[in-house]
Length: 438
Image 1 (tube, rainbow, N blue to C red):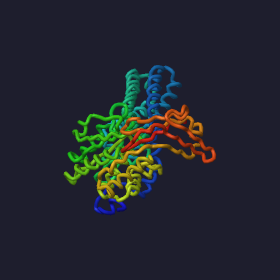
Image 2 (cartoon, one colour):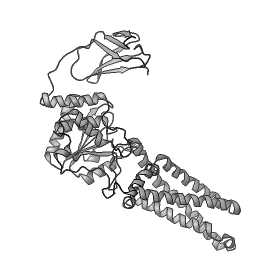
Image 3 (cartoon, rainbow, N blue to C red):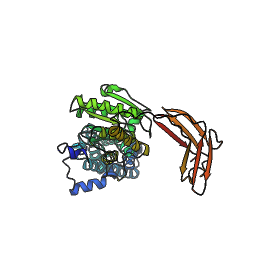
Image 4 (cartoon, rainbow, N blue to C red):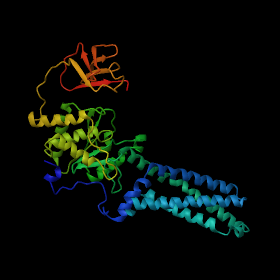
C-alpha cells in the first residue's frame, strides 16, 4: 500500500487549516508573506515594550503639564504608538482572518481598547488646548481623557497571549499544527484516526508547549468519548483526569527506542481500542511529537495494514508531520535506531506473526568504530562504552584506563577496535552507548 488515502479514497484527513481560504488567491499569497513577520517573536516583544513606553510617556505628560513644548513631543510619541497598535491589530486580523480573530473575547477587548484609546488620544492631541487651558473644567476633562489612555496597560493580557502563541510556534518549528475552530496546537492528524502531538503541558511549560487544558478541550470537542491518549515519555506524566482517565503510558527514554515487547503491547492496545467503535481515535505523544511518537505511529500503520514496509510508513509520517509551507526541514523520525526498530516490527509482523523471535544468548567480544578522526581526541582514548540491558548497565568500559577493555587504534584505516573483557551474556533488547569528550 502506498498510502491510507489510496485504500480509502473517501476518507478526508483534517489538515487543521480553514478550508474557505483560497490557496492561490492574491490575498492569501500576501498573507503567507507577512504572517511570519507579524507573528514573529521579535515583533510581539516590540509590541510589549511599546506598551510600557506608552504608559511612561502618559505619566510623564501628566506630571509636567506646565511645559507645553515637551507635552507636544510626548503627545506625538503617544499618538504614534497608538497608530502602531492599530496597525498591529489590523495586520493580525488580516493574517488570522476576521472571523477567527474575533472569536476570541480577549481579541475583541484588545481591539476596542486600541480603537477607543486612539480616538481619545487624537481628541487630546488635536484639541485647541490654548483655549481649553482658560477653562478649568476643560483642563480637568482633558487630563481625565489622558488618564483613560492608561487603560492600554490591559493590552498586556492580549500581548501575553500572542507571545505564548509565537513561542509555541517557534518551539514546534515547522511541524504541522492544527489552527482552526479556535485552536492553535502542535497537533497533526496522521490519518483520520491517528493524532500525533507534542506533550500536553501545564505550568511554565504550557507557555511554549501545548496547554493540557486546550488539548483536552480539542479532544472533547472533536472526539468526545471516542479518544484514548498514549503518553510515550518515560521522564514525565500528568494527571489522567484531563482525558477522563483514558491514558496509557509506554515508557520510552528520549531519543531512544521502545523494547520490542512494548511495541507489541502498544499495538495490541490500539487494536483493541480501535475495534470497539469505528469512531474511536488515538492521540499519541512524546515530548516533541516526533521521534518516539513517529516510531509508534509507524508501528501501528504497519500493524493495521495501512503500509507494508517500514520505509513507506516512515516516509508517510514525515510527510504528514512536516508543514512544508513554512519550512522544508524534515519533521519525521530521524534517529537511526528508531527507524531501525520500525523495520524490526515489520519483521515481527511478516515473519514471526506478531510474536517475539526465539531468544538468543550472545556475548559482544569487540566493537569496531570507523571514521574515528574528529571524534573526541580522534584515537578513541577518551571514550567510554556502556552495554545496557533492560535499562541496567551490565558492562562499562573506560578506554583511557583500559578498564574492562583493550583499545587498538589504526591510523591508516581511521578506526579503533575496542576488545571487551569479561563481557556478560546478553539477550533481548540491547543498547550500546558511547560517550566522548566531544
